[in-house]
Image (tube, rainbow, N blue to C red; front, side, top):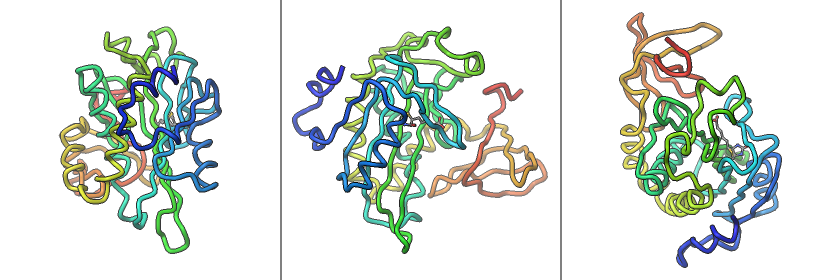
Length: 264
Ligand code: BTN
């Protein structure tokens, strides 16, 4: 699979010499973090055919069975403060949607902030991890991308069966190597545009975000709130109107969308 993918990368792809491929690894994000700490350059990428400790947001695990999914981590080294990079996950999600659309002809949606959605179910997710220096400047950023490609419904464990899908289940082209190739090219481009084209990237995110306009629930300080998702701000925060009439912006945590993942 590795040779096939490297052969399909166009000659102008700038990072082909810093591409690491594993049959099995605990987590591509963990491995890339070690490389980053040892000075790996921007564009270094780690791909695995299986993860034994794949991680998602909020301390969750990411189901990563052998030969079924794409598990990819990509290193960025933007010259900016952490505060200027709040939109990174959103920009990455749009890049992945672009790549999936290019490969399959179908564009997934994004459930705020980082879930890729196809036919109302979770197709994958993005886990970005930042390291900063004592002045708050970014030392490195890791974008970890997991996509369910070749899973059948039976491949998912009971707790995921109802909420997860794959490209194969949707009858779409699901070859992980082809998808990796398309995503890497989009991420290479994102290295150039991340800081200069923030408004354009966030407009694209707003068009892909299926959470907007929906009835939602969120938790804050152990309380559950309900309301409507109104907008995404310039940094990727979700602007919501609670049922009690208060407008606020949520920047972290879990937001449930009515009609998805069992929220009725
Ligand atoms: C989520 O659903 O909350 C994010 C999932 C991110 C999974 C990817 S797979 C490649 C990379 N390595 C990890 O351990 N996690 C990310």
